[in-house]
Length: 478
Image (cartoon, rainbow, N blue to C red):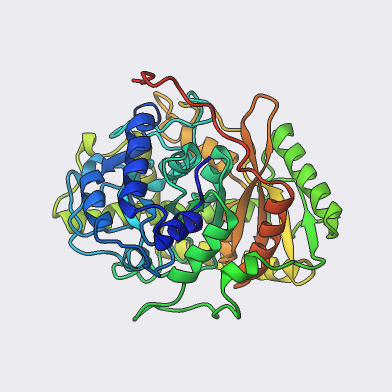
């Protein structure tokens, strides 16, 4: 069983294990498992081993010597390739670290590579044409979710204890659910997006990580949270370190539970069962659980989110046109990406602002709802991990997978649209051994309460005892 990140750093600090030994072990795991997973698409093994040699016993940084992976979007790492899963970017090389990557490195993390993702993070799966699909450690024919699917698969498989992830509509929490790991999306502006961005897609996008443990997620947020110079806005600072909160009793919380999709799409019975199971566990732990859901206009919310998201993708493509000094040709973009780009470019400025207004109305309704509850419990996604290829476009319907994606993840976008913190927890496994996450949305700026609840649930039902099956050493999938 792989030690979590805080445990690994403690071993390095005490001199019981060297940073070189930790990184060597992670590289060995990656070389053994990645051929069947395709989670890491840019190995940085030699560079990581060189960095590990500079880390000595007694290093007091919270994650000194701990192996780490970066999702290949937003995470500029000076001198390394950045692709965002797209053939359009070619071999683009970042010139500087993003602010978040700089904070990761100052905390002592050692980057051993970059992880796979869908082109520009559009879908809730990880099957880009450029690199091929990432496979779920729990079933090699299953999707790991997305868009942080490479990171989640690597953590679930035990290559690293945690990895960078980002989230514009559920992209931390969806793969956390599919791969059986912990994934928290922080409050809007909790982590910086600079220096290249102030915010992204009208505040939908946040960055953090997928982790093996709640405590690792909390401790990592402690070292990365806080506004950077020039950020357009910031969230109130926590009263206590998140790591302390994760170890604190939550008291009696009032939790709303619902298995009805906010956009009224169908929810698989297994995902509903997992949610009711988590509700019963919360009751057993002394919390008050009540069936309730926010009053959201389903059609208006779905349409507004789709408008803002498609415009955001169009803006991403246009930004890369400016940075690269050229426009894409037919083979540069996947059919789905091209269709969403066209869809976003067709939206007028008034339509876009009206969509933003609709999401702001949803924000007010969620704030009112959560004034009566401490958290809202739902499924994370509407289906167990689907088979690879489920989100492929149709021969004459490039948006087929995009539409399936909207039905697959109806719960997670609410937290992006409203800026609220939310987390997926691996508390349930299906009868055929697949992880099924459950989702908690918290009040604005109150990650602390979510971490308290998560720490209690992890202790009550630890998931580290679940290990995905390992393929034979020679098992390589094309």
